[in-house]
Structures are given as C-alpha cells and as structure tokens.
Image 1 (spheres, one colour):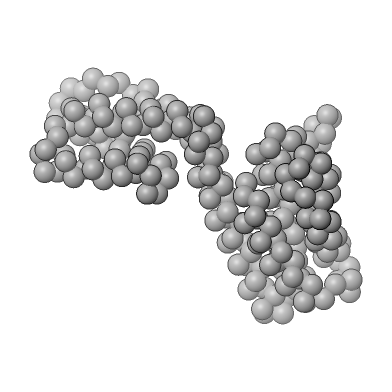
Image 2: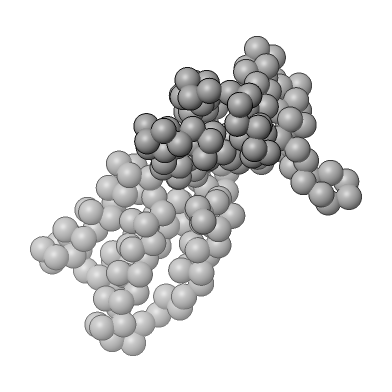
Length: 214
C-alpha cells in the first residue's frame, strides 16, 4: 500500500519523538543513522533533502563533522522535510508513487492483451482507471462515498471531477466510454468489444493518468 502524506508525516514524527540525548558513541551513531535513514527514505530523489543525507554521511565518514553536530543538522533537515509535506509542497512525491503502481498494473494489462486475453486485460485497465479517479477525488477534496457511507460509483466520480473542472467535459466522455467497456468485461459481455478497443483503453488510461496525476 503506498504511503500517503499523512503516513509520511507520522513516520517523521515518530523519528523526531526519539530522545535527542544519547549515552555513548554507539547510541549517537544509531541516532544519526536513524534520522538520516528517514530522510533518505522519505525525501524526493535529487532534492536538497536527499542531497543533505549524502553530504552528512561523507562528512561524518571523513571526520569533517562530529556525529553530535550531524545529528542536530539532520534533525533540522527532517523537521524542514516534515513542514514541506504538511504544507503540501511535496505532494508530487505521493503522485509519483501512485503513478509507479498504476504503471505496473497497466503493464500487466499490456501483457495480457499481447497474449490474446482481452477480457482480463480490460478488467485490469478499467480497475486502474477507477482507482485513479478515486485518487483524483482525494487530491481535489471530493468525497468518494455517499452520505450513508457507501462508495460512489466510478461514473459519479467522473461526473463530479469534470464538474469541478479537474479535467474537461470532453475527457469525461472518454472516461465514460472506458468505464462502459470495463463494465462489459466485468459482467461477461465479451462480445460488446474487441481487442483493439481494449488496447485503446489501456493506452487511454495511461495517457489520462499522465495528464492528471494523483
């Protein structure tokens, strides 16, 4: 399950909550490594935060920076990283995680259709589309459940996203058609579409997710 912004902040808070005072060199080294590991794991690749980890590690190894000094700097870096996540500045990192997961499933759909299995390929690609719509709703503050707590249908999410100008009405029409194909596959109506239409569905979902990251 991909980390979301709330989960990332929680992880950072757990690391920052650890006592800063340490009893000996071994405890100090462990504390420094724990903070640097958190930055390395949660910071965007290539960001100033990720680069800070490499710089601290080199300086500690070469004896340029004392471990006690590095611990203070690293904790400050981790707090700054937390603030950026809380302010929404690093939301794109979460989007990249989602994109990677969806790409994996679309590759699976590609493989299935190449092997002649158009029906499961349609179900997989359609499921990716539906989940992406839910992620877009979460991103844009649109509820994915009804007042009674039951999940909204994908068509409803599509309509509400278009009404909120998350994407244009023309895109909404394409999604409606893709969801229709997915429903046909899910309900065993395999003669209502062909392999070329499923291939178009997979490519369409892939391009839609790129245009509208969530």
